[in-house]
Length: 305
Ligand SMILES: [Zn+2]
Image (cartoon, rainbow, N blue to C red; front, side, top):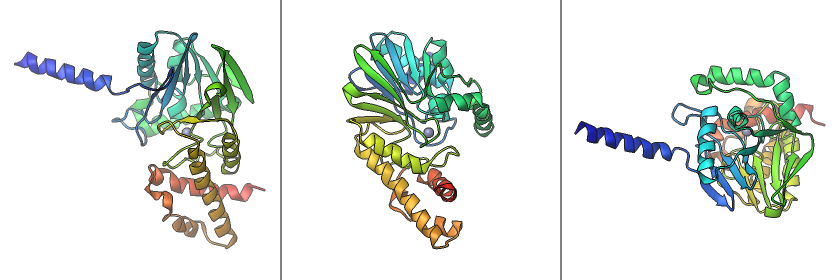
């Protein structure tokens, strides 16, 4: 009886384990894992964002590293079950923990890390270390094995790679969500990997100290003018171009309203109060990000000309 229970428990945990990071095919040779919604916790193990693998004849191109080396390892194992090829490149869309902190595991695999000049500066200036220390203090053990890595290929403006006769274009799109935003665009497929620059039915995070809501709107206009059919981002299912409008509308609304109320002489607290009952409040992460977004935009407006 005992062994039956043990067997059951083992098979249950294998089933549970196998499905903890299911790899989903989203297009020809493109796979994704979909993170949970929310902040990092013991329960979600920091698996709070998406990551993507593109299978080519030369190996995998991965977009974003997930939050920890442990999660990155699981993701790599899943990819290798589909195609046992080396991880050729890891593209980091920006420096936030859920996109960058698993990178060391890809480095172990021999991958070249592609990041924007902003990511390199973040790494070299010591800001990255301070950020990691802060995260370790807040979330503890979850991040204890994180080792920050330097990008090997640093993109200043654009960097094109040709694989299997296709162009893989890395484009710096900053300032916006952070000062390190990078988009991977594959023109022949009309697809773009946009990190956290575009969301649909979820509140974007404008509160990073290095964000620029003003220029984020310009970046969204740029994306809108590109020949894109599908966008793959850090937190949603695959999106069509209408997602750009969703993100644009939310940021533009906040900027316009806050600016108008400031001109009318309203205090920060009054402005915040007036922006609570908005149509976006039903969307995920509203309670986490909305007030931070108001605060950042309220302060930025004083320094914009
Ligand atoms: Zn982010």
